[in-house]
Image (cartoon, rainbow, N blue to C red; front, side, top):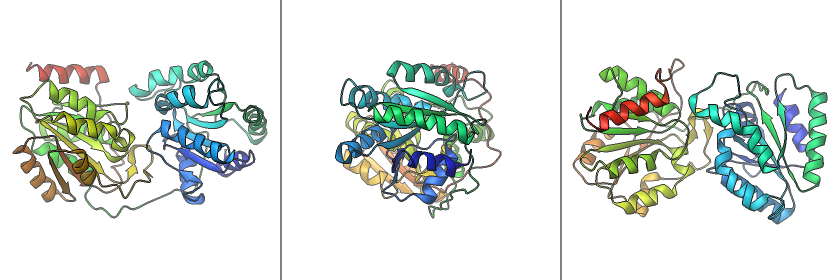
Length: 375
């Protein structure tokens, strides 16, 4: 279905605001919204729960129903405000959801999406949210029928969800942005790993950062046993690193994080700072975008993670925008007690031939844990 027709159908429901977190399945939607909707009509909060709450605020302030979009993995973040804020048994707030369907049963996908795909529709049923699947075969007539169902639900102060399969939406116009930075993210990861010592441990965040770290470690050393490659659980790599560092005080632990992930659960930075873990170095590769799901802007481009880390109370804070600056920061960090923050400004984009780990998530876990034990 052409994205313009899809959006026009939503506008016909008297919905003016689109609020959500980018998703690769919904990239045609995200491209279109970034190109054609103003920043007052289209907003990208830091996580899916915040998107639901923001939409609830618009309704409470104006009776305007909003459209909230997310990948199905984001339903976990959204679950609390769906169940305890907008549900009919609480504040009874209508809302339209667009949910990108990753991990669709009987379809090949990444490990972090498999179980989420299995429970997506049952979870909506459990929440009492009526839904409809949108796929490549959904034509305009069928879509109009589904819009009528959605309208009935919204009119009754209920929620309705369109669960959108891969390839269901198409858009010829692509949204491109340039953050002005020139240091490639994969080069930054190579610079970080080039200074690896035998006792170091690395926790890498979900998405392309873990994929690039995997390839760079294999290229440099022929293995990646000191890396825990986080898949799924976006925004939680720093807390995984905090846990690993706390129980391995004689090892230097590096968290290689992304800006979109760090924004998603920024309270973790405050916790890390207050735990005063001497051996933890938190590195945020900041490109002002959700790179792994289409390069959509985070809408938080004025956020300085270095300044934020100082306010939270990280022991030492560094900034870098080149290989030389990053190398210098890493050397200083190794000589200081943490928690340490290094914010690295990196360019958008990734290699077209960027691969994926050949080992399963469980195999990565086993290899990493064996390395921690010195095996």
